[in-house]
Amino acid sequence: MTASTGELTSLTVAELSRRIKAKEVSPVEVAQAFAARIESLEPRLGAFITRMTDSALASAKQAADEIAGGGYKGPLHGIPVAVKDIFWTAGVRTTSGSKVDADFVPDRDATAVRRVREVGAYPIGKTNTVEFAFSPTGENSHYGMPKNPWGLDRLPGGSSSGSGVAVAACMAPLALGTDTGGSVRIPSALCGLTGLKPTFGLISRAGVTPLSWTLDTVGPMCRTAEDVALAMNALAGPDPDDPASVRSAPVDYAAGLDRASKLAKGMRIAVPREFVWDVMEPEVKVAFQKAMEALEGLGAGAEEVSIPELEWVPAIAATITTAEAGVLHRDRLRRRGADYDPAVRRRAESGLFIPAATYVQAMRARVLFARRLSRVFQRFDLLALPTEPMAAPQQGLERMQIGGVEHSVRESLLRLTRVCNVARLPSIAVPCGFSSEGLPLSMQLAAPAFEDARVIRAAHAYQQATDWHTRRPEIAL
Amino acid sequence: MAGEGVMNKETFLTLAAALGLDIGDGHLDALYPEVLALLLRIEAVHDIDASEVPVEHAVSSFNGSGA
Image 1 (cartoon, each protein chain N blue to C red):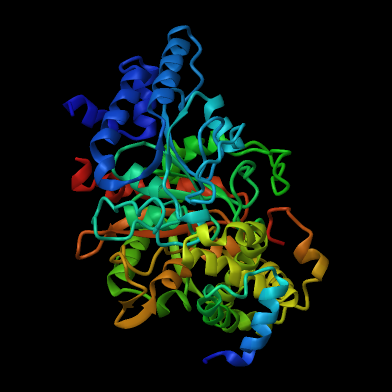
Image 2: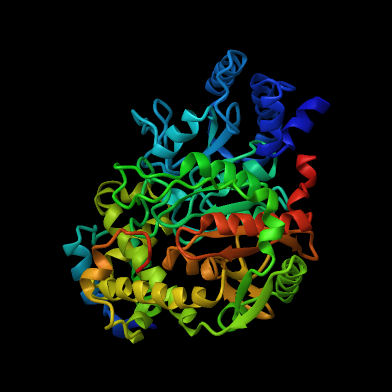
């Protein structure tokens, strides 16, 4: 690999974009650099199910011609995107991480894929995912588990596992993921990235294999909050093909980033007093407290608040997700049950045994929880909490010690991220330190619905004051 | 078996057949404890007093606001 290849692939979307716009680098050079990086690292990391090198190079050539002809489309023009393999891609197989869909070739793009193409970006490959996005660990018995670049024996997190690994290892500057209970933020946290679960309904899910129609969201995974903003400008917007899509006023998510640090002054941040700390590694709490101090150094004010309703979240989320997944998979389970991963099959089939009254009660409780959480935002601008209670766990464990007490790995990974899925709020995962073993740690910043720009600005302000997001795993250097 | 009170094995097998799952499949022996564990885990939703939320507000809205 040449020095320039390594240099290009370590750049953020914003940095690549500036060089492309200034014609210091051609989109073709960018595509070639990332293709070479994938060629070099993919055998060790397994981030992709399907590589799209040829079409990526063709798209990059088209972008180069458009820019040379004066048709620059904006910051994503000529930028490669790693796409989780549950987004439909026209003419390219979309497995959803499953043997069941191993030969499925959609005839059209998911709306999110179409939107990044419309602004001149292009898919460079389809990334590995937990089968049908139904687990937070990143494991996949059909296509293998992607390796976490920060520790090859560690979980990458899921379900958008390959997307997290691809960006962390500099095989793509931007990836698309989905987040039903944390599947953007969990791999972002474990792989040291910045990832956004947007407000429910803000980005279309049309053409994305569903898991839970009332909780599924699409979100970008990048290295910086600035890159998240650039991606959101392309992705957000109403879509008649998604019944959950909302018609909201257009927002420039990158606006105000240049004065984000000033805007952070006076921001009121709520930190939950209960629930969050019951399952927690002490070093994560220390990193989180230092992150709050960094934000206070910018003039924000953090204050503990009591939100006892957080205790409701695990039961509400498990009921809704599992019941809806069971319904969505019922026909396929009857026809092809033996082709599912046994654990995913049992998880989905379990949902069929949830009584309707329990599902409806969980739906009512979800709305009540969202209302109660909205009261917090009457006094505060942001809600802050760690993304994960621990750094990336060892692969293959069902249970592990967290804070000296044994807990389920799967439930622990979901514990803090599901809060914002149940409340349908925007939440951004931001690197905030490293464990004693050199693994990334992460915090979440959440805001009221449709205040996605606020969490991006706050994360950007934090990243202007810290350098955790600039660290790269040794394998990517 | 822990949690058998929420659904005994006979009821589980009857439901599994009604749902179209293959009851002759040995896989059901592995599924049963997972179903029990799930039902126990989610029982807590019935402890939440959500009576202030009308059912039609909870299941018919895709307005993204959470309310």
